[in-house]
Length: 161
Image 1 (cartoon, one colour):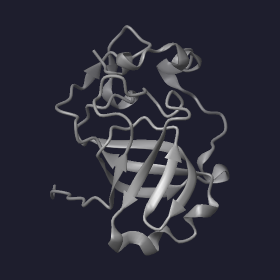
Image 2 (cartoon, one colour; image 1 turned 120 degrees about the vertical axis):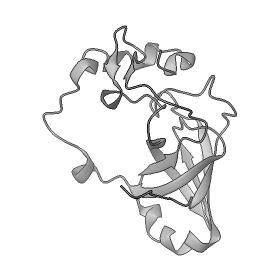
Image 3 (cartoon, helix red, strand yellow; image 1 turned 90 degrees about the vertical axis):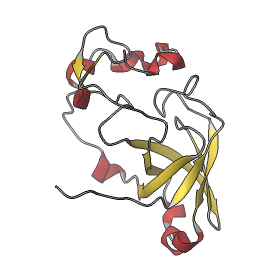
Image 4 (spheres, one colour; image 1 turned 135 degrees about the horizontal axis):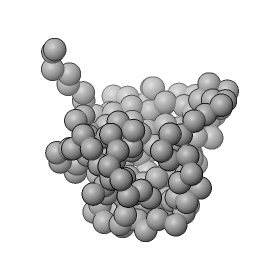
C-alpha cells in the first residue's frame, strides 16, 4: 500500500498543555474554550461555516506514541479491541471531536467543548449536520451501559491501560 501524507490546515489552541488533565471527550470539556488558527491559504474555505452551531474537527494526535491492538478503556476493566474504543494510541494517530462553534474572525475559529491538546495539528473541518450525522437505533457495544457514566471519569483515566 502507498504511504499517505497529510498536511495540516491549521493549529488547534486550547488550555491543555499536556495529556494529563485533558478531558476525555468533548462532553467532559463542556465550556472549555479555545481557538483554531486556520492557515492563510485556507481562509476561503471558511466561507459559510459560521452558519453551523457545531463542527467536526479531524486532527493529528501529535503526542500519541505507539499502540496496542487490545486495550482496557476507561470505564471498563477488560481488554477490548482497539477499534472498538476511542483510545488515543492508534496505528494512525487521527482524532475526531465535535465542538460548538462560537464565531469566526478571519482565520480564527472560536470554539468550546474541547478535549484536545494545545498545538494539535488540524487536518480537516466538517460541519455537523444533525439529520446527516444523527443515527437511529444506535448500538454501543460494550459501552452501552457505560456511556451514561462518562461524567464520573477523572480526566486522568482517559488513557487506556
